[in-house]
Length: 418
Image 1 (cartoon, rainbow, N blue to C red):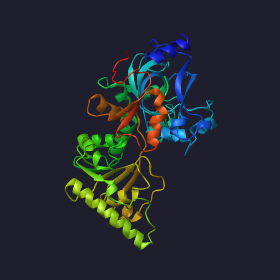
Image 2: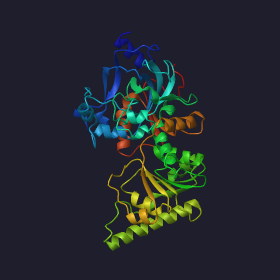
Image 3: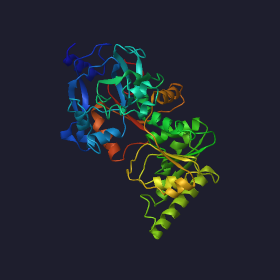
Image 4: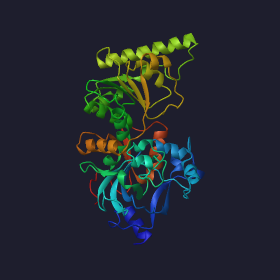
């Protein structure tokens, strides 16, 4: 089959014959010369289809999820992902992003036994050297120096007809969901699952109050559901009362509108008494609103953090004595200040967390397979709108929940290839 024929099939929304691997494929590509706002950084190109190794799988992408990491890739900051890979010896002078996908396995390497050609899969974004000494010794691969996020730190992500992944990243697809819905939640869901279950003794317990920042977003919408399934009492922080019903339907027992408060930002210098008093008054008022949302004077044992710079001081302040603030991102900035007195005198924990390992990603996927997780798909885009949907995210104008892009699926609502 020629590339032209494949192009015709692609434009008709039909997959090539199962197992047929064309030499070239269509992709949404970022190049260093186009670094900048996403609407112009992403451009359609025809590029070589990647070759796979003995432990890899090649997946025909039906739909791709959208995450903020490829806004950063488009901007070229804080990391030039292309330059970083070139320094590591990789020759490609372009980046194909995308760290969530649903699709069909079209080829597998000689060592692969967990998937076969024709399997419908979703892909988690954790990749590592499966033969690294620490991985072979049974240590958490998340702590391996080889750990990378597929489709951000690695190339050949899901914004292309075919994606190259390590076979262990391929998980069974929930076939009761559409291609686009099944593509949407794995990155944020597995991230939230690790944050809430992987840091003993601060695993979520029955009855725990869990404060969840950005409850209506991709991470927050997954965290609310997971915390609720584990028997906790999630309280969501949102930016508008219009988001209250959305979060309640996911399992939130209470809501707090962050726009009602104005003390956000970095912690003032401790010697500036007036500024510290202003911050403390704001943090106390936020804590009172949290108690009102819970229905009793009970502080959160776990605070689910990702805004970072603007909110960490308040998160540390309201966290229960002996509790944990767990953080996976810094969307408002990386320079977060902590009043150390609360850490040592009230023995609170500030814990970093990053995506998930296989066990955690598969555990979250089991909840999706069982129909216990709503992917919270809010909007689906065409493949040629890849830059546009990332632009919405860059401008903070994206809808609540998760977004997805149709790649091989010709139209929304499909659950089978044709």
